[in-house]
Amino acid sequence: MKTIFCAIFFVLTLPIAAQTNFYVFAGASMYGEDAEAATGDGIGWRIGLGKHFRDYIGVEVIYDQAVAISPIPALIDVDEYEIEDHANANTYLSVLGTYAYPFNDRLAVAGKVGFSRYTIDVEFTTEGHEHHEDEDESEHFLLNEDGVELALSGSLIFTTSDKTAVDLSFSKIFGDFGTTAFSLNFRYSF
Image 1 (tube, one colour):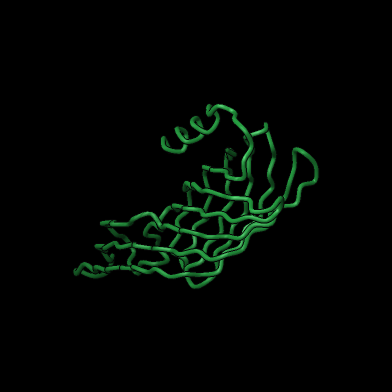
Image 2 (tube, rainbow, N blue to C red):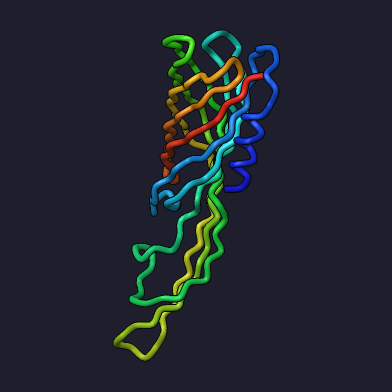
């Protein structure tokens, strides 16, 4: 979380310079718990770089880090348990083509489509204590997956100055381990 605040401070304090077609952004993403996608409930972070090739058409490269799933009772078949958790954050590296439509000088919408490479690495072991049995049960859950899937995103962009903007995004990555996120990003053009 400290990294997000430092990135936001850096973006907001950069000097205003001549307009170009490149921009950087950083922000936070909200994820809901999804056992099938191995994504946990919480806030992750996002950084990215974009370029406009024409007034409305461009490309973005985005790196997202999501909360890994925590051991939830739906994944564990014991009444009481102790958990040894070894989960890394889920990561998504996306390359998206963008099309932006400005309503006026301050407000625009953008549609984005492309591909996302995901990496999920979750491992935990449970030691369960059954009420009616003398023996303890243990379960081991390991998920180490990566792949490439289709990604879609939509944004509402509020321009705050010649160089800065706030981007509210909804993103969906498809596939077996796909996820959905809402993001608040601060954008700086240079």
